[in-house]
Image (cartoon, rainbow, N blue to C red; front, side, top):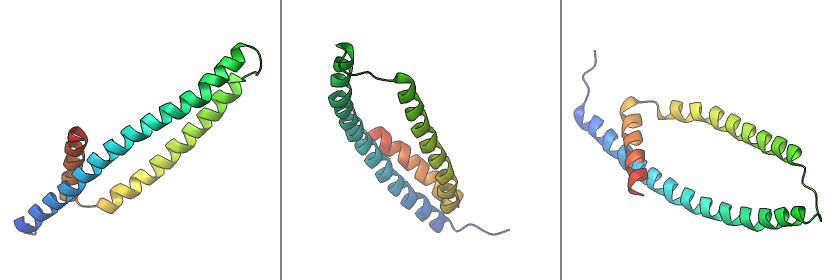
Length: 111
């Protein structure tokens, strides 16, 4: 049985915690900006389309739109699930994973 070097363990926890904090903080800020931009773009595109459809100038096929959005969501979900295992395998060690996870949560809450 190996004896764990506490200074190395502490360095791994602190380093990964700091990186996790920065990642969590940054992801929250970026996601907030992207949500605002996506809302503005959606409003610019869909409000005039809904108005034109309401007065009869254009016709929107909602069944085709639903199929398109579902396929985009399924593709994105498949991509995220396939890359998630790779990320966890790269992190590898439990102290690094724990410190990173705690840092992300703290960064997200402070962001």
